[in-house]
Image (cartoon, rainbow, N blue to C red; front, side, top):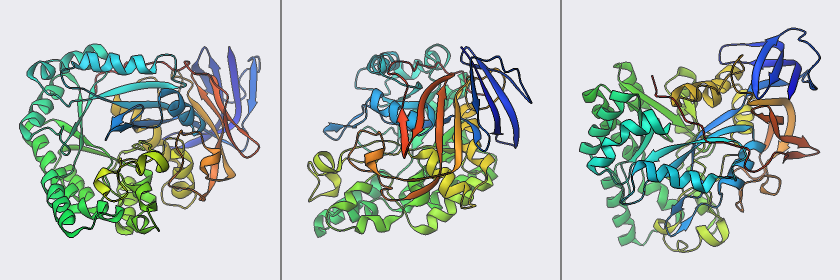
Length: 461
C-alpha cells in the first residue's frame, strides 16, 4: 500500500518546510517537491501541518492501584491515544512481588495482545528489587527491549537509596535509564498524620500534604546519587518551580538529570481542589497540582531545555464509583490519577503554540523527537526517510471544545471539560494505516484493535 501526502507543512524539531511525503509499506520512503503521483492514495494536506505522531512515554493502562484499577485497558487507552494524535505509548509495568522483570514484561504484553490500536512499549517498574532482579537489568536492556526502569521514592513499594545506587550503576553499564517518582515520603507521612489529627481530610489537603519541598528534596537527593555514580536519571512528572530549580542546578553542574512534565502541571493549579463538594477529587494525583507560579516556571523550563519531554501520566479513575469509592471523607483513600492521553497534542498546540508559550518546533521536539531519542524508539519521532509512517495531519485552525462526551477515554470526566482549543488532528496514521480522522465535530477512531505491536527499544546512548 502506498500513500502520498502532498503540499503539507512538515514540522521538525529544528524547522518547517512545505513538501510531499511518500509512504510505502508503513515507512516514509521519500520527502520532496512534486513527488510521483502514482501512489494508491493521495492526500492533499495544503494548509495543514504534517507532524510526527506524538509519543506518550508515561501511561498507566490496566494498572491495579488502591483497591481498584485504572479505567482504560490497552484497547480503550490506545484508541483514545490514536484519536488524540498519539501514535506510540510507553506504558508502566509494575513488577509484582516475586516476579522477575521478564515475567512482569510478559504479563503486561499478554494483557495488550490483540487489543492495542497503536504501537507500544513498556517501562518495568522495579518494586521488588531482589539481587537477582538487579542482575536481570542487563537482559532487560539488551534482550527484552525495555531499557528504562521506574522506581518510586514514595509509597510502601519505594526503593531505598542503596537500591537506587545499584540501579544507577547497572543501567550505566548497559545503556539503561532510571526513572524516578521524586517525593520525600517522610514529609508526606508527617503531614498526613497532622491532617488526620486536625480532621482536615478534604481533597484540598491532598495538595497540602505533598508540598513543593517534598519534590524539591527528593529531586536533590536523586541528583546526588547520579553525581556519585556518574550515571543518569529521568524525573517523571516534574510539577514544581522548586523541583525544576534543583533539576537546573544539577544540569548546570554537568550531572545527567533529565525531566518530563505534564499538561496538568502547565495548565491547572491548586485552586481546582477548592471546587464545590467533592469535585476537587478529580484532581487528586501525585504529585498534586501546584500554583500558577509553578505553571509559569515549567513553561520556561521547557523553553530553556531543562525539561526535555512532555507526557501525560494518564491514570484514569471514574469520578463516580472509583474516586468516591472510599475517599469521600479522607483524601488519602482517593485513587490518585487523572485522564489525559487523548488531550495531550491538542492542549500543547492550543495552550502552548497558539498562545505563544512555545514554538511549533519545540512542541514537536518535546512530544515526539526528543521522546523517541530519550527512550530508544529508533523508528519513531520524526518525519524522515526510513522512519515509521506515524504521521498526524493537523489543522491548526480547527476549533474544538473539550468535553468527555466527544472523547474516547474510558472515564466519566476530563480535567479540561469546557476548554476550547485551537488546532486538532484531522487524520492520524500509525505505520501508514489510518487510525483516526476528524468527523463533523470530533475525531473518530477508524483503525482496528490489535493493529499495534510491541516495540523493542534500543539500549540508550
